[in-house]
Amino acid sequence: MENTAFHFHTLNPDTIVDALWDTGLRVDSGLTALNSYENRVYQFSDEERRRYVVKFYRPQRWSRAQIEEEHQFALELQQDEVPLAAPLMLNGSTLHQHDGFWFAVFPSLGGRQYETDNDDQLEGVGRFLGRIHQTGERTLFAARPAMGLQEYIAEPAHILQQCQLVPSALRDALNASIATLSATLQSCWHTNWTPLRLHGDCHPGNILWRDGPLFVDLDDARNGPAVQDLWMLINGDQQQQRIQWDILLEAYNEYRDFDINELSLIEPLRAMRMVYYLAWIVRRWQDPAFPRSFPWMTEEDFWRRQIASFKEQNTVLQQPPLRLMPEY
Image (cartoon, rainbow, N blue to C red; front, side):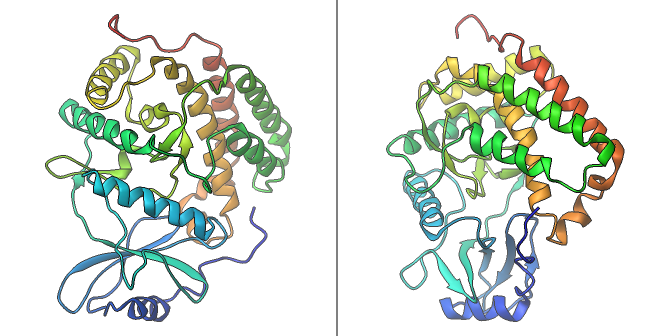
């Protein structure tokens, strides 16, 4: 768990209003907290009833250079007419600092929840992901990391080994299940893919819909394989997955050719996300929002289920990767 003090305890309404005042924005409405665990995000209106969203970045997570790369990518995508929430340029910059917090202001863009069982919406998302990756492959992030086993398995495994939330009777079993998963990943994770700048966390919760997809939250943008931005949109049994992949890739390929060999990375990426996500919660446990939102982390049955899930995923990793329709 993080050894540092809880990072957001000094971020109070007065601090937020003062920070926005420095950018030239006058808060007229109250601040409405939006759902975000990693950062602190608030919606507000100014004196002219224009709605905005302000995002305060979690201290010590990203450097200034890394946040600026996120902003630059968003602005490039906006220039390429990809529908997404891009930071506003205020006083000549998209990134601002106040009382030790980096923050950015975005327009408030509403939309409906993306429907995971809507094939038309899946097709629309696939088309725009192809366009996002067209932009993303022009260059790579220099300051932001690339997806790999060190960040997504080795470091999380070390955190979980020291986690005091794990019942002592289950600690050895948990560590053994992660070690086995890690060893299997070493043999099936390959790097013969072309890296590009990714959204990085393109799950259904980061997509809104209003006459088409609207992508939000580039906070996890990094270099990696294209399939990272696609696989979390697929669900159901294997037959349903094949149909969804067919829809998604046909639309994606209108703008960028998808390397079908990257399908072999789906289950390794899923395994990496499982371990990384669990360690992420542990890292943030000193933030009061996390014990409130994840109370089951203190329950023995939860950790038993995690061990079982890791073992099951290790079995899946040893099976042949998903095969699509003949045309692919």
